[in-house]
Amino acid sequence: MFQSLSERLEGAFKNLKGQGRITDLNIANTVKDIRRALVDADVNYKIAKEFTDKIRDKALGEKVLTAVSPGQMMVKIVKDELTELMGGTESPFSISGNPAVILIAGLQGSGKTTFSGKLANYLKTKKGKSPLLVAGDIYRPAAIDQLEVLGSQINVDVYSERENKDAVSIARNAIAEAKKRNKNVVIIDTAGRLAVDEVMMNEVANIKSAVTPQEILFVVDSMTGQDAVNTAAAFNERLDFSGVVLTKLDGDTRGGAALSIKYTVHKPIKFTSSGEKMDTLDVFFPERMAQRILGMGDIVSLVEKAQEQFDEAEAARLEKKIRKNQFDFEDFKTQLQQIKKMGNIKDLLGMIPGLGKQIKDIDISNDSFKGIEAIINSMTMEERRNPDLMNPGRKERIAKGSGREMNEVNQFLKQFEQMKGMMKMMNKMPAGMPGMRMKR
Image 1 (cartoon, rainbow, N blue to C red):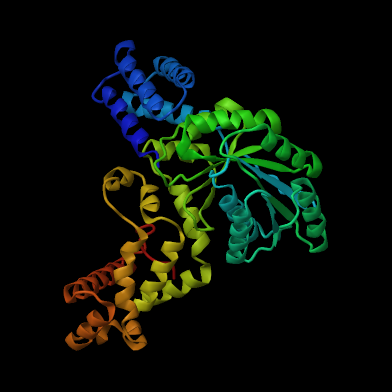
Image 2: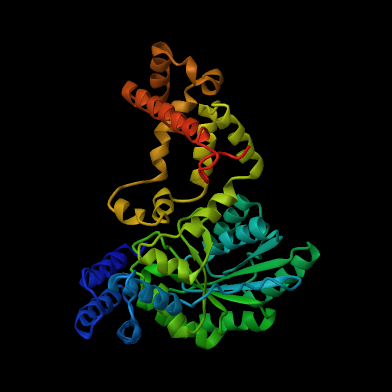
């Protein structure tokens, strides 16, 4: 995500390394490189120029403290301006009303239907809502099928009328049905086209008039760059939507849409989405995204994702076992599964400040854990709970059962013992060393 832009911006800041102060001369090249990086990321030239003019004016007006280098000061200025360009602060999402109605719009292929499922899952699992998904695409039968499949995956009801070719009446009927079933949120997935046309605009505008939604979300394929921004502007003229959703952020995203859509349509980005899994939906925080673009990490989001997966009872149980040096293979497997639920491993590691640059060329995927899981799954329950039972005969059986080489099994067992040793050392740290000893 935004890897090319991040690298180009990092290169631009190198102009100021070793400089004692910011001057007209050394700032000129830096600003020029930042502007080129933005244009290459498919940001409109007018926006890129206005953005970099602000950076130049701010940089020349700053008095660089002795403890802060010009390069560091420039990074802060760019981070602040990127944050402002993308909206400044998190935008509220309105789910009041009985039921609250959310209208989803966008071009065909932008990821509307998948996003509708993800939003229903988000509102159900994180906001305690009871959503109803509505199949409002009357032109593509596969869209109804897709929504029903997604609904079954997340255990959310889907309302559809396969023979009805009036999207407005389907939306009205769905709201009446939601009231009968005590559903407090209605999410209407509308039809998309390959390009903006009058029929499409009239239909979605008529649905809006009929159901008066609390939120109208325009879904944008973030890989389409400036084209997505132009499409958003056309939709906004007719719909006056309340927010934008950026999908496919795990693809080859140059960043143009994320950086300039707020500036162009004056509507906030409310969510970002990546992948096909129903739990890969994130609330959009402009400052966190700016930090990630600049390689500063996003430790707050990482902690939030961890908190969602690790409950207090499990943490207390695990802490007790580590204190007694009883951490076993079954515990290790449980932790792996919880980490995988947090999302893409490379994206998670990229949230750690300074680590993103180091791993950008390394192929890391959740499949990396498959070998370890196969080894653990080939152990008996007795072996999983008592690592000391391992001997050559057991290792050989485990290697054959997991389809791994003996050296892979030995390497994993060695790493596991090293990890247990580190846990034991941390547990013995003097109480005076903050954060290094587990609470008793």
